[in-house]
Image 1 (cartoon, rainbow, N blue to C red):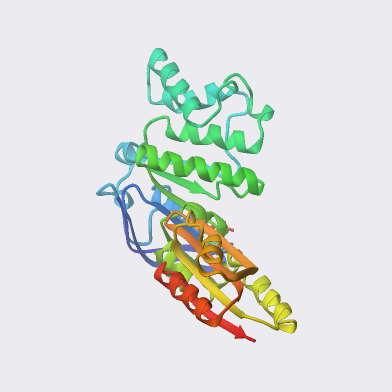
Image 2 (cartoon, rainbow, N blue to C red):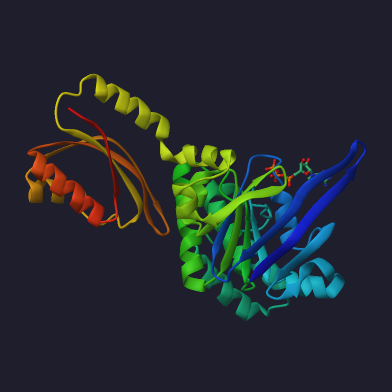
Length: 341
Ligand SMILES: Nc1ncnc2c1ncn2[C@@H]1O[C@H](COP(=O)(O)OP(=O)(O)OP(=O)(O)O)[C@@H](O)[C@H]1O
């Protein structure tokens, strides 16, 4: 759906040249949610502007739906950009227009007739969960509701690609989750390709299928989200993964328990892509007649299953504990005995 081939973008400034994007190649599949993560100045916004044709690359090619966005201009570019929509960190709504008038705006520009426009606006309001707020002004809405308007407006002309520019960075954690769930739902229902840029690994974990990590203009790592979480390579990726893995707390918990550790085995379980519905712990207790104490846990959901670690203390007959460990391995949960008394 989207292909970036050896893209570089240089800016000439008074103090010399700045390379905002350096030889980036990426392929984003149709229907995929693809995340680009990086700290401030990594080149994420420049990437978004290259993707929607607002900027031309200094070298390389940008293809969206087979069309080379980076080499067209004028009417052709405007037509191509109709397939690419965008939502923003600060929503960019028209403050003097109501919710329904904001959503109708791109339809008016596209010359859609009044009757059809009203029908489409109603569908979109329903889709983003804003029924009852049609006549409200943006100033009367919460941040989450404003972003819902932004999403509805972005979807008005049935785009093929939705670009999200730090779309949840201005929202509190709970509202962030609600908006991310809405994006996931829209991706599933409409098969829309979503590209999002963010500095928060939580956003990547929650909804992305694949991720590219950017640093100083380059993509330093890319891959399936679960794989990147499981085995981050670049130091910056390790930092991002730490944002959500709770590793520091785990270390402290282990140190604390080791001080008083007198019986059983202390085992670290690593879940990668495990189905969270499985009642693993209660099954261990019932089936193997052992005691299980949870010492520390940090398990997160990704679109491809659970990811994370659980540190448990197992007490019981040696043979039963061994059987329990074998059982866990049969469920493709990695086990590592950290300590035994
Ligand atoms: N129009 C421009 N002219 C000159 N330099 C620019 C321009 N746009 C971006 N840059 C520079 O390119 C680099 C990448 O900027 P960019 O805004 O793409 O990063 P970012 O990852 O989006 O960061 P942030 O989240 O802070 O916006 C920075 O060093 C920035 O100063």
